[in-house]
Length: 373
Image (cartoon, rainbow, N blue to C red; front, side):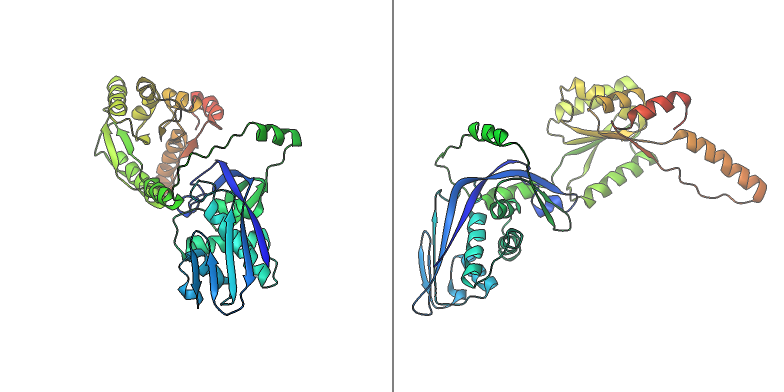
């Protein structure tokens, strides 16, 4: 008889970032730990060629394809076991309590089935096979963190990469630190049960839905149309659904601040807002403050490097701004005219744009008064 013992897990941070729809664009990361509650899977030979599976129900079937429990059925197929087996499960905690019980069962089942075949599989293989069964074959709308957390055990930071690789990094700390963490954790059974797949399906549906707005001084002007088109392309590339709501900011700075403020107050659910021109971007931080938004509550960005924009970057109200690099635009325009006059041709020169963030803002503040950017 083979008996596997697999721990349940609790997650501290990073939930949902382990879903493919999330990490395929950049990467996902979670911090989780396994606990001293387990699920046990036993696998034993049966005197006939039938298969007996005992969980909350009992199945006795002649063939693997007849098994109704999807994870057991696919686990037997993956390990190429086809009969004469008895599989039972016992758990310290009920299923549906948010501790990764389904994935713990999948990992434990695969571990026991491989051992029954005389094979030893490491944590990485077990986690990968569990993901293959639950996500790829059974199409469960779940992520990868539970399989890797339960297979590896312990306190880990787990990173999910766009190429489907997974890095499991143990959280190194002193024994006293872990004891203090353990002493300050309380886990209560509320009696509430739910399927993770139901909740994660809703999360996946909402993941790509963001409310995006853009403030522009002159709606319909070429610069605003081009820049808003670029934002739409980026949204499409990263799976963000929806359109951009245009806010008519006007060319007057006071009016621009007032209109952006009014929009933010009237639309408290806005997730992102961009300034498509220098005035709108400059007034963005003041408008966010007027609307009682906290730094980072609304993702904000824009164009140019006006004083209000630099203040927004310094105070974390804005994430980034693209500077037009006016010095290069002026210098190269004269250079092109000179070549055209002397040699009769005008090369196309792209001065590009410079991304200003909090990390490089001091350089911009130094160069800007000198008209060098």
